[in-house]
Amino acid sequence: MNDQAKNSQSGFTLVEILLAITIFVLIIGSIYASLFAGVNALSAGQESMEIYQTARAGMNRILKDLRKALSPASFPYEEEEEMLDQLDADFYGGYMEEDDEDLQLVFKG
Image (tube, rainbow, N blue to C red; front, side):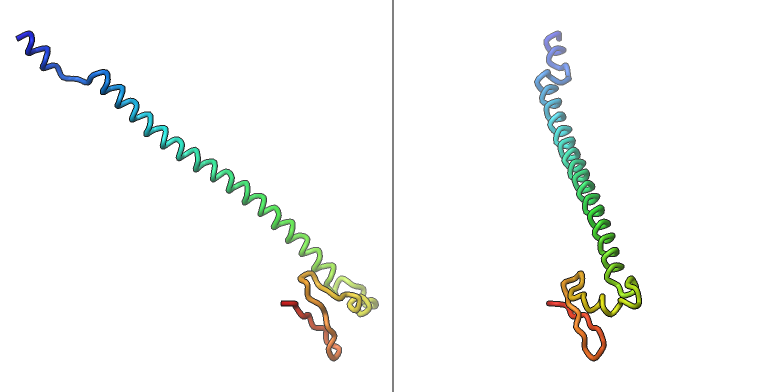
């Protein structure tokens, strides 16, 4: 009976426990690596977005200033026609043509 009692003991062997712990560590490590890569990608994307937003805000400010500088309303009335005659290009690469006393803005394709 004593031999039968020894053989009927249930439980896990040391090898089974070590194997289960190894598999668990590999699964947790994979999950951590995936999350870490995702967080790094998110941070890089946010930094890139901030750089582009700052550049866009700067370009909008420059564009606004140039539009104000090139608008006829910014010239004194007496010198308006003289100044407009001297302008041969706009900010977008077009040129101004005078046709029957009307100014037209023509864009180059």
